[in-house]
Length: 114
Length: 498
Image (cartoon, rainbow over all chains, first blue to last red; front, side, top):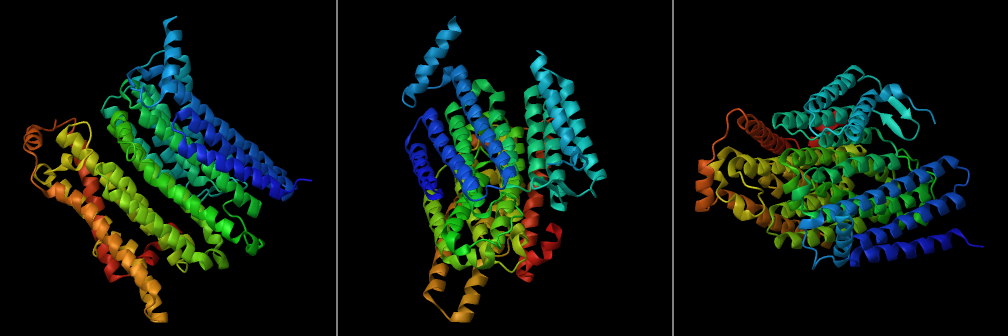
């Protein structure tokens, strides 16, 4: 049977992957997705701690759900900002900096023309 | 979970007014609503009055989540006052974009609620509300914005939030609670010793970086260039106390751990913070942009404050370092406002970015330059100014060590570190002072000579900010001189923060 330690190992590995992505990826979306790994490892930590160590504290679980809501809010904001950039991005010089963003810009311009 | 709504009437008023403005924005296609600014100002003033009327109502709003205390009342006044002053300045400068009023109202609500929070989660949530509204401030002027720095700013905020949540999970694992009043006495210390220390250090380091970053124009100067002077001012003034409050609350948990847990490993913390300071100091030497300069140096100041916290365990928990944090707050906000005022009213250019821009400030704005020089000297840490008090704890620590154990290698290494750090600070703050006092560039000088303030529109805000900066420099000088006469300044100021 899996113990608390195993879950913590998994979450640590995911956290390290997230940190690696955040540090070494240069594009906005990649950084956002890598940071989601950090959030995922945090959720694994919370759930495993509350399951193995504090099973009697149900109220804490609501807090954890609340925290997941906070994470989702952050993502929504991240993607909304990204959408804003694509929508208003006609003045940005992205050729050198972010080819992926430029591609999205083209797609957005295509739909705008219609 | 029951909530006592009667304790949070001012917060509820601000929240409901935000919802009203939001609904108006969604369902009304009119973009210019002048009366909305007066309406928002009226509501903020009403919230101030309500706070004053219900000032004696204190207690737990919601168990383990929100709590009204004396210090939260103080911060309520501070945030409402800064919000009201921003609204007045927006009305005077005829900004008629309704979106900005909604953002101001929600950020005031977040800041006020953060003062009440008694749980790490609620603390993070309200901190995020303030931060998120600062994400959307630059979008009010969509056409001019530097999107790259904007994206960097947003992604930095998101990553640091997730890191906080990850670190909080360990605190939850160790203590079984996220409450700020958590009891650590029943925990088996031997098992979690190093882990808890690392978690707390990392939380404090990220908090201090956010503290210095959040006057967001500092690390991303081109962002603030577009978001307008008054809004930048508001966020630089509002968000420093907000983060200060959050850091204070997180430090409070660390204070509960002090029995044989953190102080045994003081050397580890000292080395980590010293390494951070050295790394940042090397970074500062290569900077040419003033705002990045200030960002790096404010993280260094925060590192000193963190060490002060550990050096002063007998000073009744956290209140011992509150005066230092206040000194830091006063000097940073005065510097930001001072440089902003100089470019807005004297240079009338877009932004002061480099050292060359402030050359010859002594000729065009002598009083302003003199006050700013006093503040910069205080940041170097020269005796006779308030900034010296932050470093004084080190000296007393070394003295105590020498008295007990004689001159050891440890005492010598700390002294050498302090001297080197002092010399580096002297170099980089000295460069700013020197360029302000040096001969001006001819074209800038001639241009600024021609600038005349419009008596009704510009003179009063210029004089107001000048008065604020002079007041700050006087406070710094007074505290510094008083600190020499009475070394236990923290004890004198203590009753204010109880």
